[in-house]
Length: 147
Image (cartoon, rainbow, N blue to C red; front, side):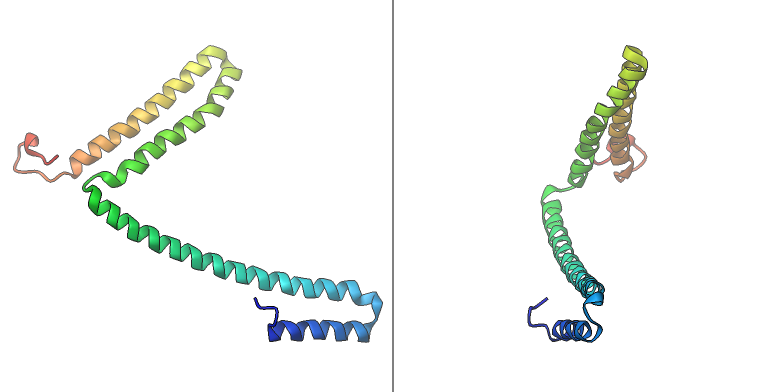
């Protein structure tokens, strides 16, 4: 938004003229109306800019991901998902531990941590089984699967 925007100048001039015509008792309403128009205009400019930058960053990320993925080879794209899930579960373990310890003392804490470990183990084993089932077979021999 440029300070020399002709449409904005027209709006401002119309607001000043309306203030002259209507008097001081409508001044706050006129100013509020003008500021609302400015807010909408600024919001639309910011939204346009954010969309543009988001599209640029997604494009750059997609390009970088293809280049990095090609260099990493098979299975490298799951690295972030694997460790991201583990990190997320450890972060969530803090409030879960506090609630469990508060409500059921040591027994509750043990149950909460057994659940956390079980969820992480299931997630890890899920990746292991997914990679094996996704690997193409050579004949009927399971030992001949690609690694």
